[in-house]
Structure formats: structure tokens, C-alpha cells
Image 1 (cartoon, rainbow, N blue to C red):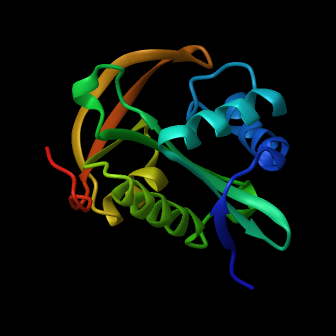
Image 2: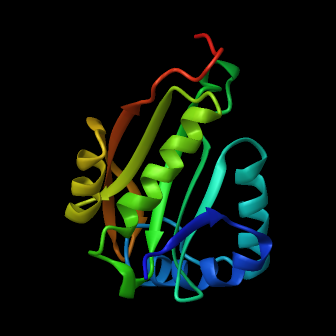
Length: 171
């Protein structure tokens, strides 16, 4: 049975926090060093949904992944640009779920009037690079040695995607 992609709710916060813990503790994919609590994650979900989106993929009644968008920068001129992220449960990788989540997120952002999406990823991260490239993102640069995690400086590669103009939107 395929996964169901839907808007996240506060009831998904514990599952999202549990899924994310692996990335925080075991990888340099996230620059967080302490896993957020379910309460922290519920606040993040609510904040993302105020102007952007937070989606979950549910498979067999369990959250198998999530994707969300937030503000790229705080200045008003960046208002139609969003930063995106996607995280999958370890058991859900390699099955196209990340692409399905991301496509749904990008469609939602376009409907909301966003024009540009950016994504940063710690390098090397070939799976994320392949996903973003397959979805049409193009590389725009690398920030060198911007994060210290697991005893080493980490580089972050940035990619960008232009979305179709939303209905009635300008700029």
C-alpha cells in the first residue's frame, strides 16, 4: 500500500521528533546537536503551517517521513522564497518516498505563491544531491566550514529551484 501524504498535525510531533533524532545524533545532516522534544516539534509544525507547509508521509499507520518549508531570510524582499527540508525514517529510504513528499511540498508552495525554493545540505550527501537534482534543483554554491559537528568542520551545498508563478501573484 502506498504512503499517504497529508498535512502534519500536532499529533504527528512525537513521531517526527523520533524520526529526526537519528539525524541529529548520528549524522551531520542536521546541525542540531540535541534532538527536539515532541513539544518542540509541535511548535515547529505549527510555525511552518502559518505561512508555508509541513507534510507527513504515513505508511501502514506510521509516519515514515516529513517535509517542510520555512522562511529563507527575514527581510520582506525574500517573502516569496522558502527553504525546504525532507527527512525519512531509516526504513523508508530508497523507495521514492522522499521525492513524493518533496513534490507535494513544492506543489503546495507554488499554490501559496512562492517563487523560489532553496535547500542546503551537508556534503557529501549523494542521496540528497540526487533527489534535489531529479526534482530540478540546480547548484548555486557551497558554504565552506560553516558547521562544527562530530569533531569536524562541515560544508553546506546550496541548491535552488524556481517555481511556476502562482495565480494572481506578481514579483
